[in-house]
Length: 570
Image (cartoon, rainbow, N blue to C red; front, side):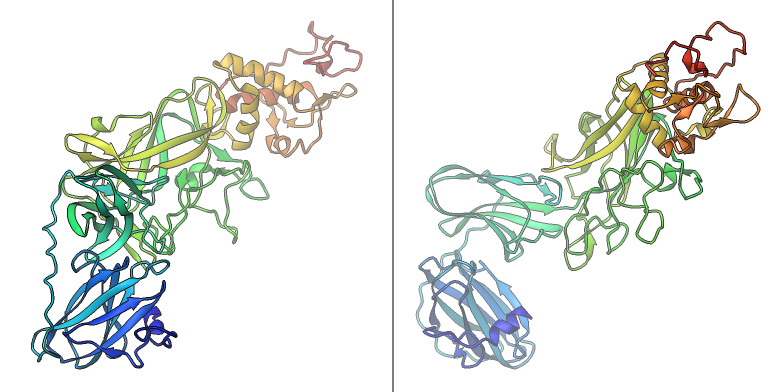
C-alpha cells in the first residue's frame, strides 16, 4: 500500500524522471540515465510487457555514491518484486515472466532513503517470448561477481537469537587489501542490514548486529547470509541461522523444596496453595497463542516482576487468578538441592503472525544451562521447540532468611568440538525463603508455611544457621519487635482460645492483619505465636503450661501488674 501511494505522488520540481506512474518515461534496451537528486527521491519508468515473455531489468554505471534499489510493479500498480544488489557491485537486477500484458513499471531509488544520492543507468532486456524494444546500444560488460565462498575473510557464530536480553552478534572480518568495504546481512536477494560501509584499510575488522533490519524490526527466524564485499566484489560469505529460543515458564522442584500457601484467598480467609496458580515463573500469554514467545508486534514477551502479595494470589482485572506473567515466592530447607523444569516456547512472532523457531539446525544442536550450574558439555541431548528440560540449580545460601534469587540462563550451540554461548541471556528473579527444615505437618496444615507469616519471621531469623537459633530469634521477635504489650491487669488472651491450654487455638489470621485483635496480649498468646511462627521456618517448639505455682512469678510477661521483671525489654 505504501508503494502504491508513492507511485501515485506527483512529480517533484526539477526532477529528471517522474515520481509517479503518470507521465512515466519509457524504458527500453538502449537504457536510460537517471539521477537520485535528493534523499528519498524515486524515478518511475514504464514498459509494455507481453504475457508469457521473460524480461530482465537492471541498473548499471552507478556513480556519485549510488547504491540502487529496484522495484517492479504490475499494470494494476501492485508490487511484484524488489532487488537490492542482484547486479554487479551495488547495482540491482530483476528477471521475471509477465503474467499479463500491459504497461509495467520499474522504480529506481537509493538503498538509503535518508541520505542516499547518486547517478545510474537502467535498461530493459527481453530474454524470451517477445520482440526486443529496440536495438541494444553497445555497453561495457558488467564485471562478474565471484562465486561466493565461505572463507576466513568473515567469521561469526552460526546461530543467533536477537531477542535474548543483551544479544549482539559479533562479526569479525579480514581484508586482504584496502578498499571500499560493505559488510551486509542478507536474506535471499534482499539486504537486511549493513554493518560496515566505506573505505577501510587492510587487516582485521569487527562489527556487531543487534538483529534488526533497516526499519528497526527484529529479523524473523530463518536463514540469512553475512556477505563481505570489497570494491563491489564478494570476498567472503557465511551462513547465519536466526533462531528463537526462549522460556515460557519454570517449575521448581528438587530436594528440600517447601510448598507455600496464601492464607487469605478471599475475604473470609480461605487458604490457597501457591502451586495451584501454575508455574512459579512464567511470561504473559501471547495474543498469538500460549506457545508463542513474542507479542503480536514481534517484540519478546516481558519477564515478570516479583509478585509482592503476601496474603492472596495474583488476580486479573476480572478477579480471576492470574496464571501467567508471575514470579511467585519459593521456599527451600537448608541443604536442599533445587531443580527447575523449563518449558520452552514453540513459536515466534514476526510482527505479522506466528512462525516456527527455526531449530534444530543440522550440525548445530542447542542446549541451555544456568550460570553456576551444570556445565553444558556434561549434558546430553539437544533442545527442540516446545519441549521441557530439567536443570540442577546452584547450591542455596547456608543461612535462613529472605532474599531475591537471580538466575541467568544461556543457550549454547556446538561449534567444532566445543560449545559456544549464543549472545544474550534470559535473566530471572525470584523471592526465595530459606528455612531451617521441613515444617511439621502436625503444626502446619500439610506442612505449608503461610507466605505472610514466613515473610514476617524471615526478617527476624536472617543469618541464622540452625533451628535453635531460629527459635531464639522468633521468641525475641514476638515478645519485642511487633509492639505487643502484656495485659498486666487481667492476663486475658487476645489471639488464643479453646479448652486445651497445651494446644491453644491461635487466630493467626487476625494477628497477621496488623494485629487486628489489638496489641495487648497474655503469655499464652505469645507462647502460641512463638510456636506457630517458629514452625513457619521449620523450627519445632511446644507450648508447655507449668501451672499456677511456679518460681517465675516475678516476670511481668506472665500477666500481673505487681510483677516487676520485664521480658525482652517490654
